[in-house]
Image (cartoon, rainbow, N blue to C red):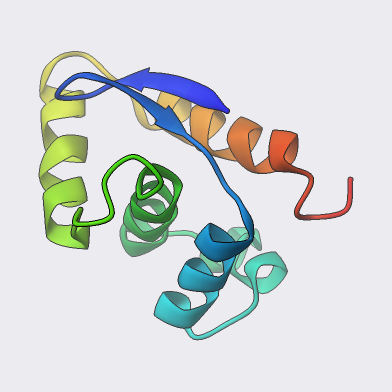
Length: 97
């Protein structure tokens, strides 16, 4: 689990349900989605949305897009955001690492 400062301090966590939500939203398996060719704005939004839902099940992808916008406006970078998300995925063990 990784923490990130968005509208407040939040924890990014990927459990079985989060991964299933990601795959359903993306229309592909998590391994395929994480392929460099498939990563884009929507990918980041889906990943962060799924990773935050354990704290707030009513969180929408649109809400997460706004959180990401504000994150960048306050000095956050794509690299920092990506690192937090991918480290949380790795820590979860869902990819069999």
